[in-house]
Amino acid sequence: MIESLYQAYLSSSGISTDTRTIEKDNIWFALKGPNFNANKFAAQALDKGASLVVVDDSAYQKDERYFLVDDGIKALQALAMHHRQQLNIPILAITGSNGKTTTKELVRDVLAKKYKVLATVGNLNNHIGVPLTLLQIDHAIEFAVVEMGANAQQEIAMLCQIAKPDYGLITNIGKAHLEGF
Image (cartoon, rainbow, N blue to C red; front, side, top):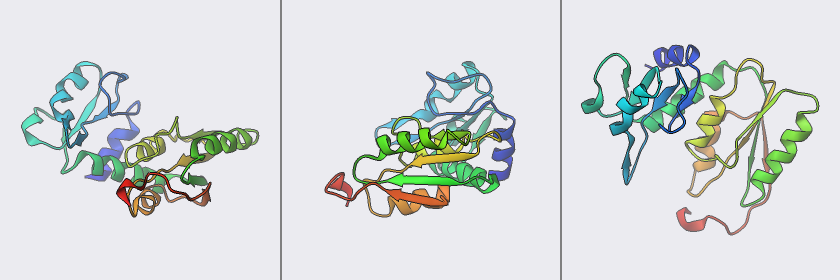
């Protein structure tokens, strides 16, 4: 399953999870949460230019442009992990209670003096944002800086399994985002 999805990814123009920002030939992932089921927007994603939609509810699968998976978020993570395994570049993971985004931007700017760098956009540093960041890395990138946030136990470990960072930087550890700990 992941290899056929990866081949589709390689011939796509990128990944999208938002029907408002789809670009032509994107692969669009229908992500579900406790109060939201994006599967119902799959046809709209195709109408807006997606070449393939990844759905996790067979009721929405209409033809070969619908790629059915067990779980959309896990499929996105598996695709990102597979892509990371194909990359031969160093990745720096940055985490901490606060200061992650500022540190990421400073490190990115310093590394950009020597390397073609890709860094997490904004603070997209969770179980969806980290895979989306990894899937933006193309053959021109020489170094990636990936911000990782956590609000639950073992979340950083899970993000590291996906990103396989070569280096890590912890800004600090304090009393923040404790609701899940």
